[in-house]
Amino acid sequence: MNELRVIISGGGTGGHIFPAVSIANALRELRPDVKILFVGAEGRMEMQRVPAAGYEIIGLPVRGLLRPLWKPGNISILMDFFRSKRMVKQTLRDFKPHVAVGVGGYASSATLNAAYELGIPCLIQEQNSFAGLTNKTLAKKASKICVAYEGMERFFPKDRILLTGNPVRQSLLNESLTRQECAAAFGLSPSKPTVLLIGGSLGARTLNESVIRNLSRIAASSAQFIWQTGSYYKKEIEQTLDVKGKPGNLVVTDFISRMDQAYHLADLVISRAGAGSISELCLLGKPSILVPSPNVAEDHQTHNAMALVNRQAALLVRDAVAPEELIPLALETVADTAKLQELGKNAAAMALRDSARIIAEEVIKLAQTVKE
Image (cartoon, rainbow, N blue to C red; front, side, top):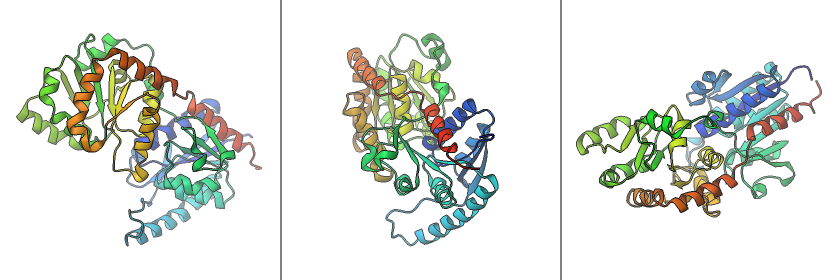
């Protein structure tokens, strides 16, 4: 094959965008001549993040279905879906990809449905342990289904499943870092136990509320905290801390640009249970307390978290009780060296490495089945 052309579609959240960009980067490493076009949803995060990563993207007027599915608003959403499918079909005819890759999210459904109808081989990448609606409906049309968890044959045809793991941000795997330089970057002590609390790029209200309610406990502890509030909650939290006072052992930031430094310094991570976050925690062998978001389809974050909890690779706190229980458990756990070692060791044992490269190799294999 003289030229390789690949469409990659999906997005909506960082959990879909990071794997998509990682796959694209791996394709470029294996085939520097590859031509890649992304397809996303208008107004969503991918429309900024993908160009920032150096790739071209087109946007579709596609939106997610409302729950429950019989809501009247879904009629206009379905009309937008069919309009998006017509638009992307023209793009596919112009770009002539050898393979279409879907990573989940609103746009991937329209793109891969259109690709299948045009006879273009499709590969889907499912990040979660409980398959999303988009990928479940696309499974029959996919030539290959790359998954991050065992037991996914309950959702997908067994003969098409490949256990690859989730591609993660390669920038996190920085082995040259020292604890001293990472502590200095946050103005913290390299000798104190450190808790990193992250609620995703937009933040997580429950995790933020858990900190606010326990400021006195944090202030009295021998640990130190890095708290990523998320941009959405930044102003509200600043106002609250102006009134209540900010403990000296608490670093507050709406966004962490150097997550490699934050992870390296952290002895314990508190996080939502998105698939990408879990894959990063396993790859880095980090002990964690997971607080699954209750606001996701099919409660897939709880399924993700339990995959680790059942193997003593993480602790779990339910969202409803987190404001009372999360910080006390974190302070107890970060002081328990044996517990931290057990959680970290078991998490590392679950890591699947080189995921992006393995998926990229599968894309190239699929492309080689196409007759020009």
